[in-house]
Image 1 (cartoon, rainbow, N blue to C red):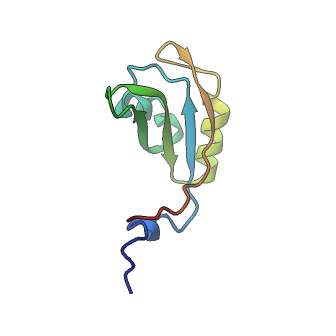
Image 2 (image 1 turned 45 degrees about the horizontal axis):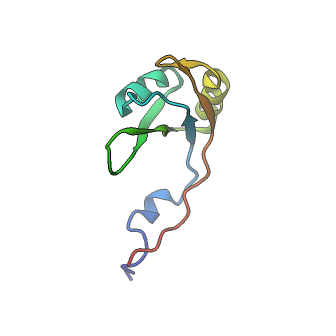
Image 3 (image 1 turned 180 degrees about the vertical axis):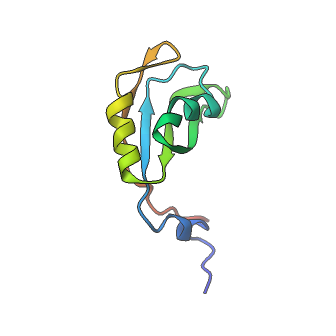
Length: 102
């Protein structure tokens, strides 16, 4: 039975997520440059959060990994390192909660 008000991709996120929150990013950072910065740790995908009105980066993003070891290694190796001239803060991201759709 399909319920239209549940998030349609909930089944895809039923398992654990291995995502890092990356803060203090330069405003010129895009998804490709963020993924490239974490490529040596096995980054699968990246997402830079942008302002809806201006389209400019909000200064933080997320990087997803295949397994917990890769994520932990990235946190240890990249926290406090420079990306685009700024020292970034890297931590484990909270798992996304279920969302209601109207």
